[in-house]
Image (cartoon, rainbow, N blue to C red; front, side, top):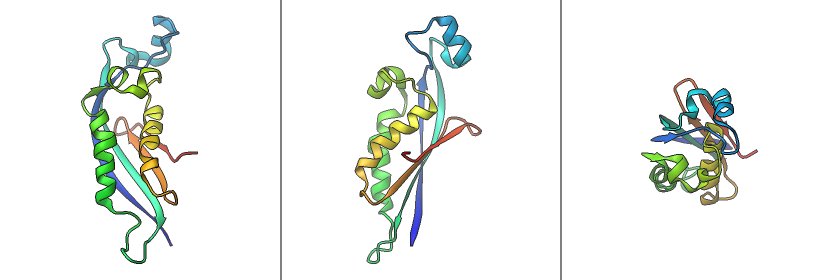
Length: 136
């Protein structure tokens, strides 16, 4: 029997959506206010979902304390109150869109899980704008 367990988390971060190889006008046309050269911020909400078989001994899909610690150490510590473009290595060359942030979060968490577990990341940039990435 496969079950999905989820943990919510939160971080605040600033970013700027732009491409260095585009003109200021082209960045403005595509990214609008999100291309502000002085950056802008979001209060991101994150849901990390793990799907797998229930362990017959523990009754867990995975220990939620372990998942909590992975999220805290690898995501919240790395992203919270940071300028993503400037302070987070992955985004020095990757545009920090919600889509790309979700993929980076997935890639940071997936290697920490048992290989038979499936992972899904849902990242809310605003209460109405969110992305989901499941590794495919």
